[in-house]
Length: 95
Image 1 (tube, rainbow, N blue to C red):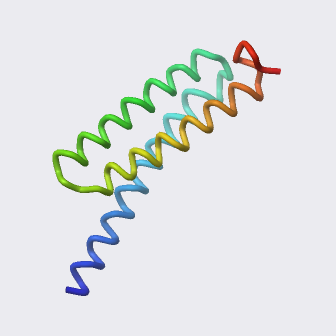
Image 2 (image 1 turned 90 degrees about the vertical axis):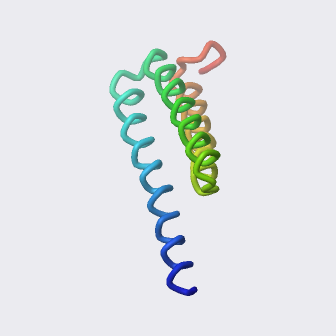
């Protein structure tokens, strides 16, 4: 029983880590080089697609770690995108 719980724990970290890694790569590629609103919008679109894929995997596979990972990605992604657009003045009400 102990070994089974440990395997699930390691698999959960692997899923969350994989999703955070994928999110980091496409965020860095899309947003930071150009620093424009198009990269930010594409990042949000990829973020929503990534979230939907995580929720779909979680609901079809009955693995809650996928759904948790999707909400972690969604929370981090929207906070980064919102902060980035506001600080760099790309949003209409930005500085």
